[in-house]
Image 1 (cartoon, one colour):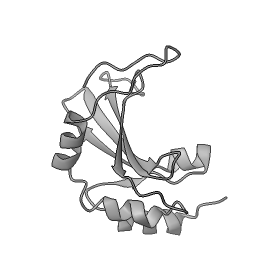
Image 2: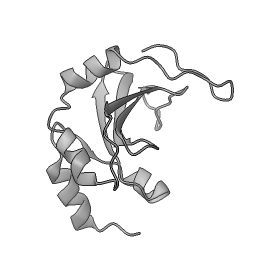
Image 3: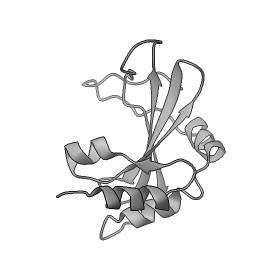
Length: 132
């Protein structure tokens, strides 16, 4: 599956509140998800990804990243947080439905979701995130 520059622009133009298509994720996994970053301070930020769960429900995943000054790559650890935004099971994953969600997912709303969502529990195989 290929994604043309015009399609990326169209999706990004449909998004609101600084959401955008995660092109790197699409190139790796052939799945369209939306991402947004909120800086907490000069070295820490939250990354939100809007996607479909394995049950085809709209969900948001939150990871906290640490970025050292003058380093190329930010790091994260653990499983992060996951919250279901809509319990409706869809038959077909549709990027347009995700872009519609971006209208109501402002920074304040995202920080509220983060505050009210517990970190994902570890099964022992992957490190559990510290609370953030």
